[in-house]
Length: 267
Image 1 (spheres, rainbow, N blue to C red):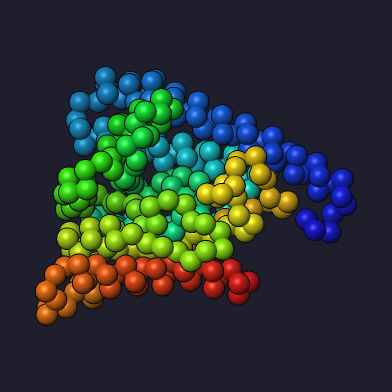
Image 2 (cartoon, one colour):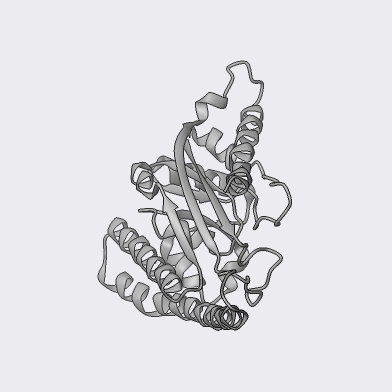
């Protein structure tokens, strides 16, 4: 792209700017249609709760795949998911990822057979995504103790829980700061943890950047799905409190998620 003439780069960037805005609208309208039409039909026709949940998550996954492939086909961005097949092994597993972009959840939910997610209470007031959240049975981040218990129960029932331990999107150029919630859930539930590293160059849809601040070149997302780790490796029988194991696990997760910067710099 850098060797292209100035006029080409200008119109390419303008094209991506227009398409990004259109796809934002498409995402919102799509969520509304899923909520009001498709999920309503499923609730009226499918009586078995387990099958209803399976069809709901499958609908979300396929919708996200269509959305991402449309973005790529339109030239807005490109992406590669390395090791996505590993998600097929995950039952009762906690998936932990860094969070550089607004699209991170969409990427992961598009390739996970089941994706249980924790969402902010405020999203229930958003008409475009409220129906999707309720239909998928996502966990709402309200009362901390109740949420911890709900996460533990979901994992023990075989769910796959996705958490971004930063709690919000990363700040470009700053070190990751992780909350201990993810590690506390893993220690309490005694579940395996799978780490996912997400990189995007140049940055797109970051915490600081508005959607209309389009990078000069087309962003490239790379999602690397790593092997699972056993939470028991971080538990010492002499620990006086589970918080110590959670602290060790949080430190390990931070070092692994920070490796994304090393990978980018080595390119």
